[in-house]
Amino acid sequence: MTNFIIRSIGQRLVLLVFISIISHAIVHLAPGEPSLVDPANPMMKAEDIARIRAAFHLDDPIHLQYAYWIRDLMSGELKSFKDSQPVLPKIWDRFLNSLPLFLIGTLITWFLAFPMGIQAALHRGSLFDRAGTFFSYAFISIPGFFLSLILIILVVKTFDVPVIGMRTFGLEDSPLFFRSMDRLWHLTIPAVMSAVTGVAVLSRYVRSQMLEVIHQDYIRTARAKGLPEDVVIYRHGLRNALLPFITMFGLTLPGLIGGSVIFETIFAWPGMGRLGYEAILGRDFPVIMTLNFITAILVLVGTLLSDILYAVVDPRIKF
Image (cartoon, rainbow, N blue to C red; front, top):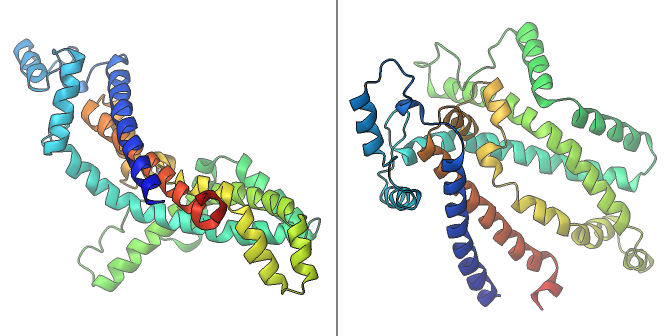
């Protein structure tokens, strides 16, 4: 197992290099120029444009631009085209904002979807199963931004409390407890909305997998041996149904970057998704390429964790 992990890490490092090269080339081959060096900007003189292009190596060949980007990224000196601020601290600040939103949304999704899907499979055709199917397809079909806007209107009209942004204006000097509760309140609604579609989709997958598993011979054998129903379902059935969800779990990590961009925009939450969206609009190449690089790292780390968890759930994979 140790040799497998070491070999997988080496393969992913090589793959990461190729991903960085390809993403760098695609970003620079896309049409458009960074806003700071836009010749149509009336505030820019010809000498200003030339100086900015030289400072950011925009006139160098693309392979040299890649080398400069890697050098500046590794040294922490990479700066944004938009405001000349260091890219890594800017991304780190947005990461700290996106992390609690991502964690709470993910926890809500997984802790609600599995019980709902298991109960729907165990009571197939019941009122709970039919209601769950109806609401799941309804939440899958209705756009998340529409539900978010409806929820904002309902909450503001009903409770007369703010829900936009990370904090309520005017509470900056309040005691720590009130500021913490205000932050939690502003975090709850966008996290719940980001989890709604995930619960609807994942619960359907869990139901389908459990329906396939609970009719297997080893489940009937476990019941025939007199094992408690909870042991049969959760120890024997659920464990064998988990393998597809381990893959899904590993691929949730990139959701830190762009998984909540819609909800971050609607709720004015300054997270990594909004940062990437604003960077794309402004042709901020350093930020775009760094976010692509971080996304690739998250994908590769997630798939590595999935491979390791496979062996934990199913010992046969070790062989």
